[in-house]
Length: 183
Image 1 (cartoon, rainbow, N blue to C red):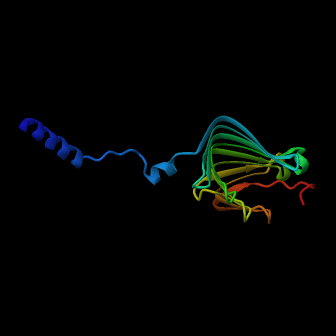
Image 2 (image 1 turned 30 degrees about the vertical axis):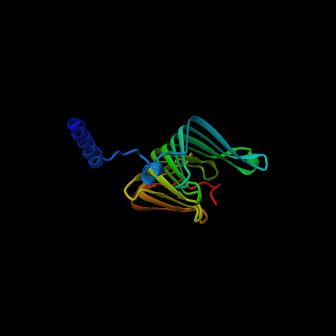
Image 3 (image 1 turned 120 degrees about the horizontal axis):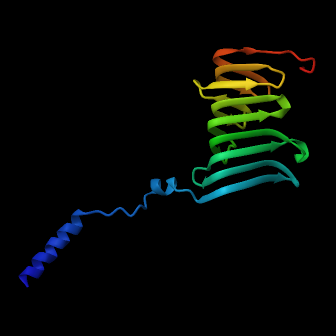
């Protein structure tokens, strides 16, 4: 009987000294996506007209953070009435703020903006939806080309889409070819 009581106290002391992690902390819950999809094709439609089409290898949605994380993304934005593609792009990864519409793209970003006749290549881009501004990383090299042979390279791109202004922070170089069609 004494042996049983001693064993009981040893077991009691052992369990009182140990803690078990069941993984229920809020930070771990926040790190888990509510939705995971693979090989996704998503089309956003307004008034029966497609606005955008996104294809991705992996899509994760985090409700608490208002965040979507996307891997190996290809996307198209359509012009008026969904008739033709205005912007075509690819990136290795994307993060989209669901609430603001801000988008961060990285890992070999390529954009083709047909209305501006511009092709843009860089490592990362950030789109701020409310201000309609586009930024690359401060030290990221950006290559911009047009079909007519115009081409520019620089680091730290800042573009105000409303004002149609594009500028580099440093190392800007390139060739501009004037067309009669340029306004």
